[in-house]
Length: 522
Image 1 (cartoon, helix red, strand yellow):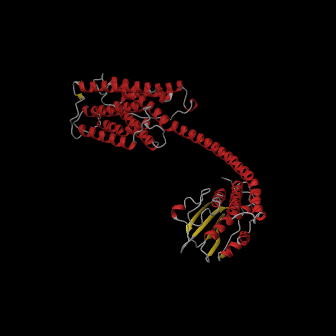
Image 2 (image 1 turned 90 degrees about the vertical axis):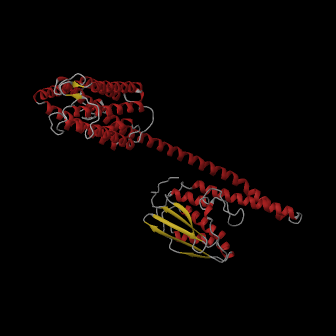
Image 3 (image 1 turned 45 degrees about the horizontal axis):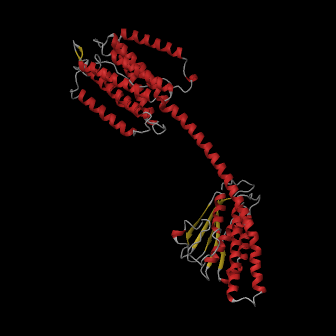
């Protein structure tokens, strides 16, 4: 076809369900009416007919590109979007084809050959793009749209350059003779590329929706008929030229349906379905995780209770033997019994800590705020003996009240203050304070001991982890894990910083609101 712009594009609204589009008979009737109107228009003023059809084609092609380019990040498969990207340089070639059409008077002296050359160039680019899409369909490979667009624009620019400013492109139409052998052969080659693309689409039909496959192959078939029509005309205003443009127009409409539905609507439907499925899976996973956590906590509590029960008599019997038979036991026997008693108490402490760890999340927040300052005073009083022995001084600052279970808060401060006493420098200070920001409270316990090596700060909250600072086997290795679990359960966190001048400052951040409004998330 020489003077007509083959377009590639889309026009009307897409189709998601049969009810979203007019009935098939109505569509056919509208198509017949449109075809009749265009034929009458071509008989009255062919140049106007050609201009309307081709400008419409260009607008649709640019629309296709715009939709495809902006939807490129959402489609799981970008092969159809690659086709959309290719329509920008095709639209540019088709627009120049309209401007150069015989009778427009814009490219004076170039006759009917220039628009025919531009038409052939656009069709080559369009058919090769279709073939590339057909080759990629179902392969799982993703082209970079930006790279493909740049390549298509460069190819389009090169074609324009060898047609308009440097006319070295083979002649396609000779005045008085009609179509050249190159033009006719090109139409057959383009038709062959399109037929091959249609065959590949059919071969990979499992990778595309049946409705889209039908529309795509129908569009390719109309384009082939259009190209074949353009091998038969002698007059650029003749019947075969009209038929070729009409076929091309309807093929573009079908491409529009394919690209809008396949590249935009269906992916978004799939996207929302995937999001809904992902949310359902996540909810199921969270419920399963919560159930697993409950089972694990119950298991830990049961094991800790069952192991702690026999420890009491073991420790008691060891102490009894040491006292009852102290005059009859040698030094080694005394040391062994003392070791049994010490290890038993250590294991009992560990079991007690594990029970506390398992209870986190089972307590409802209180209806009234907990007086944290008074509660911390009780913790300090319980540690008074060790504090005095280490000649430590304790300074307390502002401790805002918070609506969290008092027993859990006591565990937090008991562990942090206990660590500060255990690792603080003899004769040093321990600082306890807090601050409030809305519903968020942050408490800190600061010591001036050896501090926490930076390499260990990411592990000290792990269960059973014991740092390298301090006496061997000091503590159970569960206390800081309890603090972290409590903080996380109440939407907070715990971390450690270096104290200015040496030492460690532990921070605990939690969200506390009264009347049971805390949202467990452990």
